[in-house]
Length: 370
Ligand SMILES: *Cc1c(COP(=O)(O)O)cnc(C)c1O
Image (cartoon, rainbow, N blue to C red):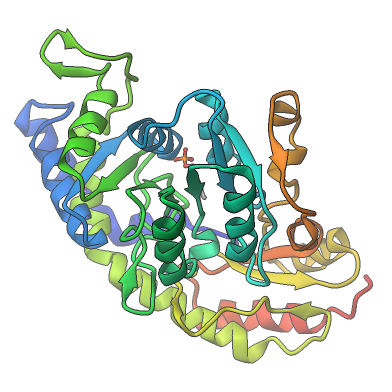
């Protein structure tokens, strides 16, 4: 089966470096918050072009910590997207704050024109955009909105490490940015992991405290924090086995995207537009399928292709959130299009050209009915 990921192929590639990293951590005798995490954080910060990276337990906690550092409190309004991993809004809701959903644009990213209206009309002081599918939102416009409304931007870059918009990298506009190292992400750990990024040294110190029970010094707790530390082993594995390969992986993802874009010709499988200003890292390759999506997925499965759906249910429609306060600012017309018609084709860096050609053929054979 051709799937969304192939962790066994990845292992056969990274094995030598990963085992050496494991050995290094074992030999060091230091397992939590040591020199491996520090070294990884320094490299990660460089990667994002910011001054500070703070490793934590997962992407959800990274968002949670970033939101707390941004000063979000109960009942604050946060303008965000209905089309994302649930974690984006879960982080907001966990703090008692209220997500304000606006529609997405034709690429599936938060519609910044609607976000602007929502900021103007609701008085929300926080904006949480998601660089979905590996596409950067318009960072110039985001920056302009942040300045004009004086709102605090927190970027969700879980799917978009190394992506950019024109000359700017993701993570360069938000006061804080959160990312995830869940294994399926472009930079994945061997389990859970995440990081907060910021240029502000005070916010960085606070994030460091928050990931470690709110400790500012040993046994000194100035606020109620989390236990959300990145393990030495995960930091070592990522720094030695994953980060050195990330550039090559991203290049391969872009190559595959190009093959899909020129090879997919069926009028039943269309490509959401991506502006040429966006240097996407193609975390996912979304298409919109006309006809019965379940039948299309089955059509692919029969041909040995396991595709995905990102995401079948809009966040405001999730029961966990419906029970709490959340606001839908404008009709979620495009977001519903994605929820109903989107399919993610395999685009991991270990796919062969032959596999990509096979996926293209399978898609082109689809004629809207099984
Ligand atoms: C994966 C993901 C998260 C959450 O990351 P975890 O490490 O799984 O908690 C948040 N936002 C987006 C957009 C994601 O894709």
